Image 1: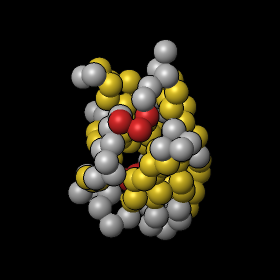
Image 2: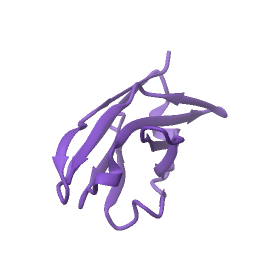
Image 3: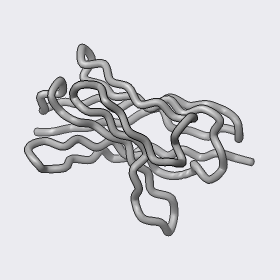
Image 4: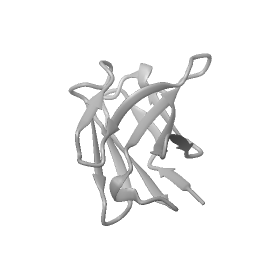
Length: 115
């Protein structure tokens, strides 16, 4: 059974940094595209960043230059390094895995950026 467990969220001041982690199990992680999404109150879930099995990345415009997605295949873990955080980055951040055209989600981790 696929499990995605996020960690690393919290409360940070504007301009600060956080690193989110997502530990995956039940999947062939090495060949699985992974992503981070976020959902702010009253808004739809949106893509933040994705990383392919080969390490290619793409980012939402809001994340470019500030966030970095990476993966450690030895640890079955994907990371999201977030710098220069802004209050508008406040959201629940979700890890995503695409396995044989099926999508799986973690439970989410709250990120709150105070001004």
